[in-house]
Image (cartoon, rainbow, N blue to C red):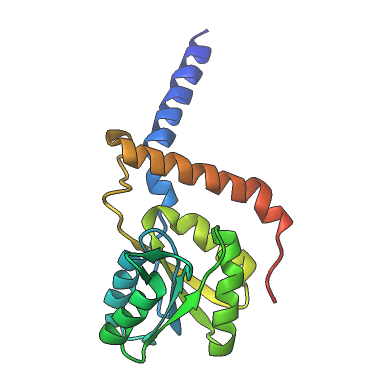
Length: 196
């Protein structure tokens, strides 16, 4: 009976530990020198871009490719037009926009592949939101294995924090990302193939 109680307590401790670190498990931040930086599309692509610009000081290649949804228009100006202006002012000749039509990270790999191929990089630093890094890194390595990938986590303090249970928005982001990660690991990983 004592063994059963100890096993139950240990199982509870393990469960609490896993739940407590659910958010931090989603984050992979291991940037390496690379031929170029690929900034993934998303709601906060601007923060991701500025993070990639901040990483330019690492001494490696200075090119940035920004995946961007071309159909989004705000205040009568497309996001791509606005981004093109900002990129030309802040990183002239060093950055370009890659039209990303997909509505998922998995689909975005196909858009990214079209933009990366003519540039012929050997290594790519993936720049995305911190909560999105583990899944994006896994998807891009599986779909585009011809490149050596590393990943840089862009902080998203309004949407995500490792103490996810302390803010409703953080909890929502953590749970949604876990749902997507589990779907990738159990379903999509096994029914997708590398992009040639």
